[in-house]
Image 1 (spheres, rainbow, N blue to C red):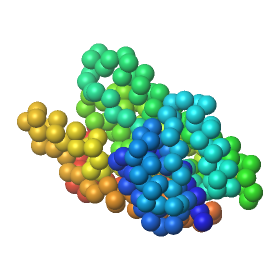
Image 2 (image 1 turned 60 degrees about the horizontal axis):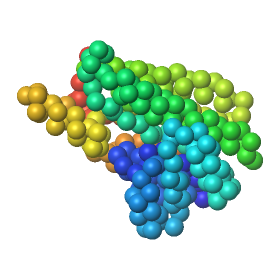
Image 3 (image 1 turned 180 degrees about the vertical axis):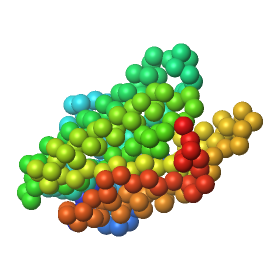
Length: 242
């Protein structure tokens, strides 16, 4: 049985991806803070392993990955997904606590999870594995009033490239999926804000299509890797945005 840890597994893209991988028969480490949601998922799937963890806590993250390794014996894939979109504004309107929280979750949290996954994959036998980082369209072009989110997501692209380079010697592949306007609660909030402001909201797509894209990346043989994938609502203003 192949194994994966999914961070941010209690909602949105992480939840949809976890449901899909569980249905496909993978052993899935469900890493998130919401114990009740993870418990309900585990009740329905014998191959689910709840890992109640705050991704910003180095000790907790290390313990969660160790627990998963002890239960499965191996980590094949990390879907490094956990992230937040703090209240927006121009840079002078962004509250410092929102900036620090964005960096803590979106960047530090992904670094900590990738660090633990890399360590396990480097030392397991057979050696190797795959890390998939959730970058977002914002890793390339910004939405208005999103300097905190955009800065952290641009940083994820650097993380992805560095992991790809450093992982070669150990059979560790790293790729990035950039998802545009999957219908999660975060995107729904943006849609509602646009409508409230008298604007036409961007088109959206089903979150399950994002999950299937992650499954494709995760299922490739070791000799192949999707370095960067962009999957988005067909008519969203990505080309020409920014």
